[in-house]
Image (tube, rainbow, N blue to C red; front, side):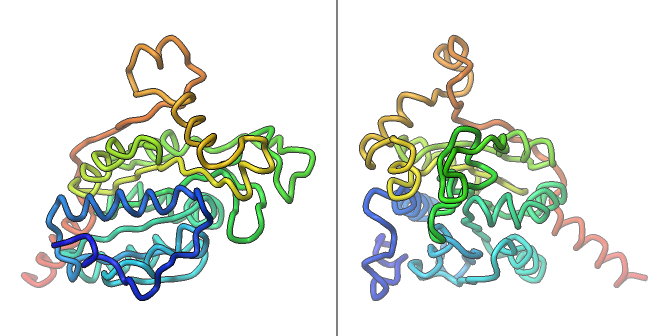
Length: 266
């Protein structure tokens, strides 16, 4: 299929700001779907509320635009009722790890076959630039005019610690690498987390003197390194990219089906 067959062109132009990384992330995701040859009628995209959660409106899949922080809860119900579907869940800082944090850790623990895409722009962009659980110390936001002192979650450590069987981090600067990570995540049988470092020039960059979109992309290039690379070993301050865990574990829906089979036999 052609790329335009995956989008609802009538809803374009999109609402994202100029230079927002979310459009790049959506582009990478659609190219991954195309590479995998997935049928749009076999895909469900579920989101909550926020800039990243506008993604389902632009794709011609089955889509659910749900409550703030509850995207994974709706996605779990969808996958349990129709386990043959490919379920993709784009989330922002809040949907994934603030109001949605409890759902996140339990989805990891269950190892249900869902791909969670955490678009980390370190800010609440849609609601005006409040700081988030992913902002980290020293970040200026509308709710932290003198900068935050809250430590940030490490999405990868949290995902691995909670039991995700696939966890990876990419950026919207390293687009080809991001597509490869998404391809492995969607193909993986189990709960997959892909954190995407996605710049927000409007609220984060402007307030934190990181410049516009070009400067923020250059920051991602300069401040990240591949996991296990020489650069990462020599400079532990760099944010690492790549696959943090990729393990085969029993998948939740398949285990549940075995229980159903057993009850039918009895």
